[in-house]
Image (cartoon, each protein chain N blue to C red):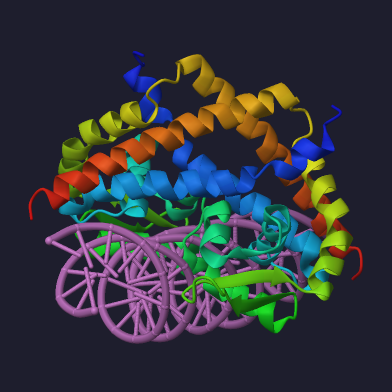
Length: 160
Length: 160
DNA sequence: GTAAAATGCTTAGCACGCTAAGTAATAGCT
DNA sequence: AGCTATTACTTAGCGTGCTAAGCATTTTAC
């Protein structure tokens, strides 16, 4: 897969990813700010619903593609807002199971339509095929990064 | 551009953007850590070189797609590392012009090859055409976000 | 020419990602 | 069964993005 070095120099793909992420989050934040919901909060609620509303913190963090440690703050906020509850798992006392409260479910119903509308607006002019292609290419990059990180990790542990 | 609502619900594009950005940054951080260079630092140096090494902080921030305020910390660090210098612009005393020092230029020469190698590795399996297509689609999303933000901004200032 | 608006920088403090280190519970090995 | 490694969570603190507010300078409008 030979590439033109000069073109590669002018790329700023990673910055573009970061920028799009921040911009997108910003739009949704503005949209949902009347409901006291920030981006990490509503995505957690949203994902929780889609996962079946009865999963451990670890499973939820994986689905959200963030670290468990990063999720803790958000879950704490949602809990004190009365949107979710956390209770110890019976089978595995280490794990804490997260569930939506009635309030949380109710809120989700209210925002669902808005979220979808925003997605449609922000993806205007892009076909589903182009979208899947976008995801495909991004997944390749993700895989490459993981491969690379594994190598880098190995090269440091080798020194021990 | 009609879209399948159910498919849209399962998307997590913004999260993917964020994840890729963090992962990519992480790889480069590990690669360049022996040189005391973090991601924002070397990208600033890199972009500065490409802009001609004699630009205001504002121009640099724009090129890096971040806010001037965010750039300040990084420039401060680079300055105290002796990589760049900032001096008042003669024509406009408000502006501060950023230039690479000899040390900075020297360092850039050293890392240039590494940066390109990493890009090639992380983009393995993706053709230049696919890459341009990726950028094209991402730009559309960026434009849509900007349009949307403009509308949202207007709708709040209208209330004043 | 001066008052008002805009611009460029700076500082201060927030948001949300991360890693590192610690604890309790579980799983695996002999 | 008991020792060790692993797992799930938690806490603490960092990094890098942001907005808000303030200052000095420049530009614009009258």
